[in-house]
Length: 315
Image: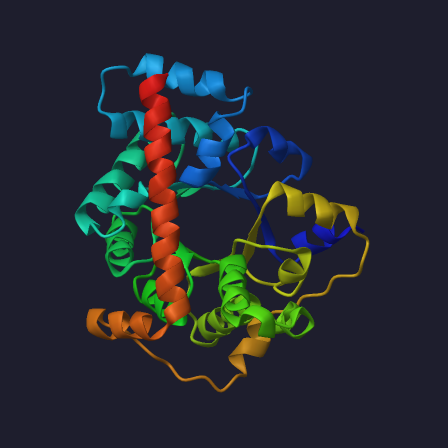
């Protein structure tokens, strides 16, 4: 049995791509997209007609509506291939605007429903800012499920659990990147792999905390740099993996056993914590890595959203 099939026995495998024509090869349960992945996809010849067709159909409508319709168009194509859920992201430029995030989330769901897609098959992806987490709490109360992304810290995860969001996406690779860059010449790769990888340690701590205290929010490790990070989190609720790393897993016959266990987590001696806005902001401020990576991630998605706007205007 290859590692991908082995992983699927104890973790839900999710494909992290806008390139839906690749999905059939790996048979993931769910799929995630983001502005950068959609931007990458629409610049390929295979997907350019999809962008042009969406623009032609809704020409004259507000640009933000056309973008949402394009995102939903990709989401619907993905849902035709996978059995589970697709994550569709709210414009990152709204990351600090609770009301606007709620409104965009509602519109995305309405657009999916107009295409005959049931609400349960869509996760609205929102940045894990304080404002984003509050927006997600409101959406969840309306029966709209959410995926909290750009999550780098324990306090973000705790706040998401308090908000009863459906799912969180802690970013393994970007945490690893920060610590590696921060250490510079002092970084020893061999000392920071598998269970010692700083990104893996972060997700493990979140997973154990959720399972210890019966928090229902699903944990989906994201943003992987290598197969070792994935295998070190085998047993996590879900893992969202790029097509390149899915191919690496499928090509390997190395044995794979669960690294995380809900049962083991329940036996741990952990302290229950909670955050209000003031303590959340202080905890984020104390975590240089999380503060920098959240800001950088939002900036990056904003840049790609602007590029996507330009492509829509030029189509």
